[in-house]
Image (cartoon, rainbow, N blue to C red; front, side, top):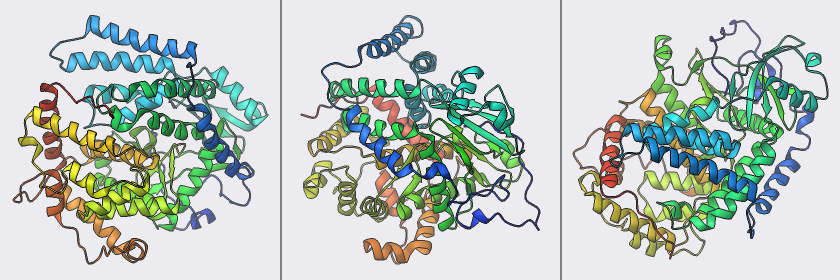
Length: 548
């Protein structure tokens, strides 16, 4: 969430590595050393996390009426945005100008509505190549360019939570924030002891507004089932519950600081050094204030500067993907909110990753199910993959897998979607949605975070490596896991990743490509998507599917 600054110099070759590098993926030279035994804010994090999770069913329970004032306010602002677009930018035939006008008005309405809606906008902003470009570009402003709180408000929150005047803790504290997003904003500062830091400060009304918005969303969600395109598959009530699970934990920065340490430890255990986690301060962490190490680097979008500095952007992207998948498949802990506002690329090619409020955590059953989902997908084992979806909670425990395979027609050859008419595509989508809904499909939290991160990585390929050969890259990633974790994968799920080498014909078949296609760049994949999207739009758009 912090804005970039000039890269910091590398550590001298004779510098003694900080002791905390033994357990965490931190920078080579920290402003302090993290000692896990002396972090007073960690004492109650387990209880705090349990309390946050226990609050979710209370917030999402069925109510006769929503919080009326907030409900009317949200409906009024979104309705006014749609009405303004209809009067000024609407075009029957659509087009970039019309989409840009709608996107701009919706983004402004979301910003006025506050954190929960801004967070939804951030999710949309990660969907480059999935959502219209105009919508993605507009909602990127929700990442770190949301109107900030005043400095007086920031001072009050910091002083209330730290229990001291600002000047007693900081030698300097920038009045202008580096970035402002949905839950908080960050300021550069220098401690009285001389260390340069970033201070994350929660917006004072965010906790109250988030809870009201969740209650309002929970009330309206059941009424949306089967009423809007593909919303039924996403299961609006379940999505609200998942949204509540993630955002409620984000409201306590002590949990975020704990997430930082856990992911830093996972990365170190995996011997991954490409991701750098900022060190949280040993004592200056509260529910609404998080003081952390300041890291510097190139902004994610500044590809030209990275390449000019000799950074291999394709390697950066591959390493980020491996670290994300490794955390999920092998360790069960992963950063759940990847987007361009949450990372820098440092001068040495490593990635400084921020904002750990949304972190995926899986128990061992969920993790091994996720591992099976990925490995059976690579081997085109449809039955095994659906069983993994079931164990992840995406399908009921008593689901008829053979019947679902038959209903989804995935035991038949995949047709090339670019050679289908718009009506045929809509028909296929409708049948898929009907089959999934009839079998009780839903989107569990961990799968939602995985999809969200993969949407970001898909968009990152567009920016960092548009001509990369996807067949070759998937093979490299698969080869890494086979060589590095093959024995563990075999012992945990009985899949021999070493003997079962990656076969590009599987990926070709899954995409509906002809056997003669030897390579596929991401640019070509996106062109195929654009063809499909246009045909669907020309044929009337995505279908509305009822559960019944």
